[in-house]
Length: 208
Image (cartoon, rainbow, N blue to C red; front, side, top):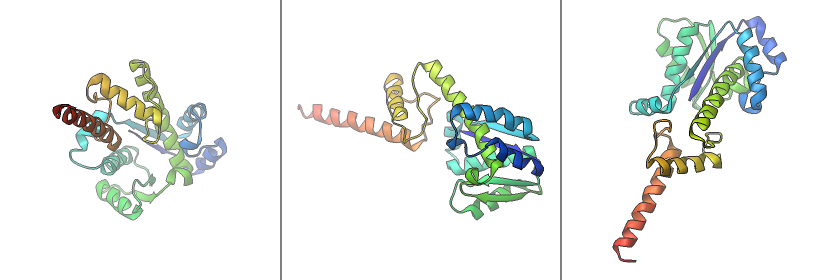
């Protein structure tokens, strides 16, 4: 998981729009990489945090994924120290997320705006999403080169990712540390595999 924050002067926000900055999912890889350089040049400062699958699995013993994301958002806000921050809320209850973030910021005086689909509505959030997506894509490509395997987009809707998880599970006889074991998709595939083993064992035990 990659989380990013980018800070800009108010006067420079129209420049983001002029560059064509928008939700990273609406841009192809080459365009994102081009915009990444422009965004970094224009930003006052930025932070990009790449959280490993192993680290997320550790943290999932204590909290859910949204709480993990919020904690990293708070760390980024504390690092950048903006006057105002706009966050892409990980939950439908945006007011709850706003208050949760404010509660973790302590005495830091920051106006917090929490909205769903903020990466589509606000150029500054779109810019941060582009920074995060470029790092994520590079991490996926590096892992593909290391493994000699196609990973796909890394989302449960991507059939290539599902096939990759199944191949890795067979190859390693379990999930290695670069696979998020707490991910519901990983759990489902592992459960299906274990169920097949159990069905096969029961079938053999009955002499069939």
